[in-house]
Image (cartoon, rainbow, N blue to C red):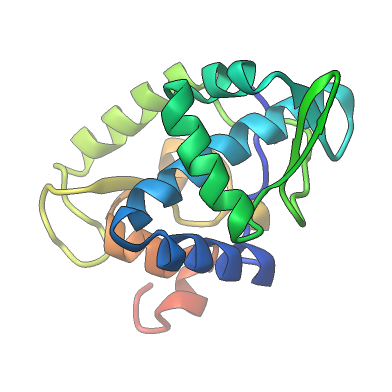
Length: 182
């Protein structure tokens, strides 16, 4: 699987906020669908080293893992707010995301390996956020030194973080995020 940059760039932050806001009551589902669709588009683009990817809309829905009518509903909304571009031709639907930068595999573990790594980190940290001390709930596995800053996927660079702390920290170092936390 190819990964694409989840950077905190202006494009990413503004676009995701717009997706959630415009999604109304379905905003969080729209956010999830956006990233599912974005990941599949990025993977298809990387295969052909192209900024766009083309296949039938049925194939897009299948690749994203959504029922066709639900995919159409999400795609229609994402097209309306400009989060996704679509061109229809005799070859199928060409989809792209404005500003998406596809990059080669950055050395992340395979998804099934990542699940095992996360589970071991959560267990090591007693299912407790290492930043605020909250226990249980929506837990994430955070890179203390972000990958984009040269961090690794080694256990020594991974900690359990609650969703709030992980989302707040983003791709910052501890010093940038909370100067008092070290």
